Image (cartoon, rainbow, N blue to C red; front, side):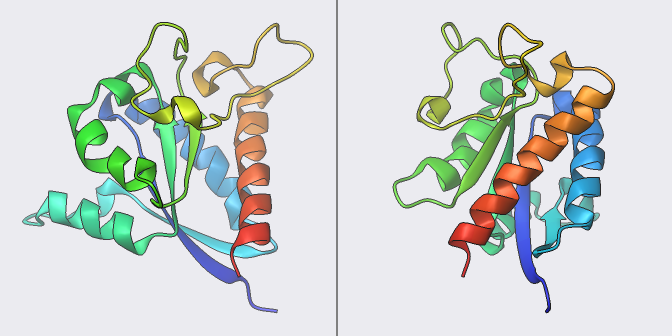
Length: 162
C-alpha cells in the first residue's frame, strides 16, 4: 500500500537555527520510517538566488498540509513570523498547525501571540517537575522529544487526513 504524501512548513526564528537543525534531524529520522505517510517539508534553505522570498514562503504555506511551529521567545518576538506566518495558522478556519516548544517560554509572562489557545508540545516525564522544551533536555531525551512530536502528529494525520 502506497503511503500518503504530506507536506509541511517549518516556522522558526533564525536565532534558533542551531536548535531547529538539531530537532529537525531527529524528527526527520522519525518521519523517514513512517508506515503511513511520506513526509516532506519545505525549508527556507530551498530558496535560491533571486527568489522573491516573501512570495515563496506564502506559496509554501499555501501548498503544505500543515505547519510545524518551533516556539521560542525569539519566535514570538519575530515581527515577520507574527505578521506573515502565524495568521495562516491562527485565522478562523486556518491551516492546521502543530506548535512545539523549541526553547522555554514563560506562559505567565510572555505574549504567546495567539498561541495561548493551542496545545503546545513539551516533553513530559515522571523525572521532571514540569514539562520541558527541546533545548532543556539532553542526550536521549532529545530523541524522545522528537519521537513524541512525531507520534502525536502521525496519529492526528491518520485520524484526520482522508
